[in-house]
Image 1 (cartoon, rainbow, N blue to C red):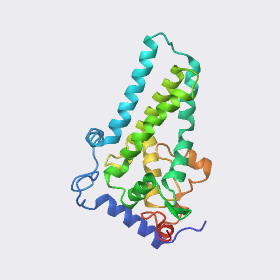
Image 2: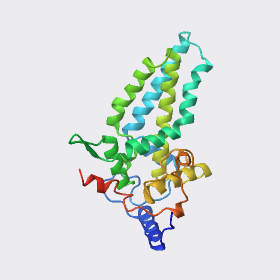
Image 3: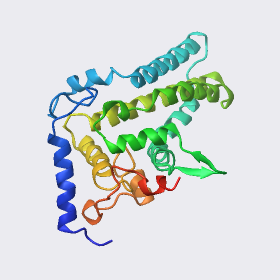
Length: 255
């Protein structure tokens, strides 16, 4: 791939600088107040809990843990085999995250039999790309969680050989979803990386939002599934996309 021109790189730097330092307009539900500044972990955590998704997922996780505890109290002991599913979910989560991001969140609106097909998740994600600073758009839509979380319960009851394995599955799903919401929020917040690991995640996701939307799809990790699927190139070799803030704008015009 050819190296982008100095003019293109300058445009990308200006775009990022504007996002870092511009005065935030109304509505007030942006990530910061008047101006973007580095904040402490405690200060950004307070805003995290002002939105429905952390409460819905957090409640789901607590209920799953309570369910597993009740099973233990009723004589359903802990078995090492029930760790297979949670461990597999954790191991494959970067791949799951990548596939969801590419296939569902970056879905191109289209017509099937003359009927427009475009999910709420895809629409919300396009709005998130249009302005990554709007805080409510950082989270999984609560309307989706109202049916998604009960669906996991149905899977736990029907797809596992016993209640303990199903309960452990629910705990793992709740923990992974909560972790995803927290990391994604933290990357878009005014908290600045303090560790090398989070700095890599922070940079990876910002490249996706401000450099080129066709690369860097993982959110909670960096250099994992993106390397596996070839979407983690050297940023210096990737041209700055003209549609990074307007996903699929050309395709949408044809609907």
